[in-house]
Length: 274
Image (cartoon, rainbow, N blue to C red; front, side, top):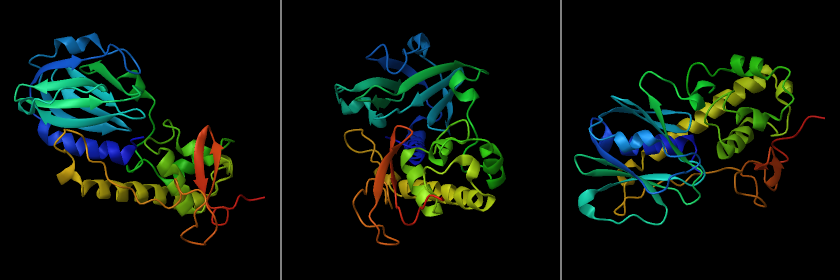
């Protein structure tokens, strides 16, 4: 599943091809992804893409008419190709945004859990209104996390994955951050100490920053000949390593379901207080 660093890499990968371009048309080959494709997309001819940005895991194309909001869902990806390449759309290529210069932004999503949404100019889409701070922003501090967690009995892993608390910390990076901070994923948020909050916030910022930098090193290869994105290989400490030895202590990495998500942790490095 694409997480914040992958979405940021997608943004940086497609931005040079789209910023300042004028839309010729948007082709939707399916009427519905997670939600219905907006009717407004049938009237995009001549609309100019002013800039692109990311909010949480949403990629936003800011136009002179409104905002096109894209979420990759569980299996979505964005690729760039040219009309002159004459590459036919595949089974799971659901949306093409075509510019007057002949560039195509193609959206592929086998599971169709992603979305393409629309917000009129000067309006904020409902899905963006309740989002918490960006994890790499100055608003996400240890003090904020500590106060936000008071009286919250939810497991800390679920807490930091709640987009109303902080955006963009998905399952992979939640597991990795908690491991590096030495915090058991089932520890209640209200029992997190100020020192643990300081460590966890620092680690989350560091893990995401490192992953974005790592992804940035692949941007030269982001667009491949078939128009598909070249995501970067992640170097992971615990996620996906069930049954393997912990790099720090040699204990065997375990997994359990926390909040309906597979959670990886080291039973020795991340002990749950009694």
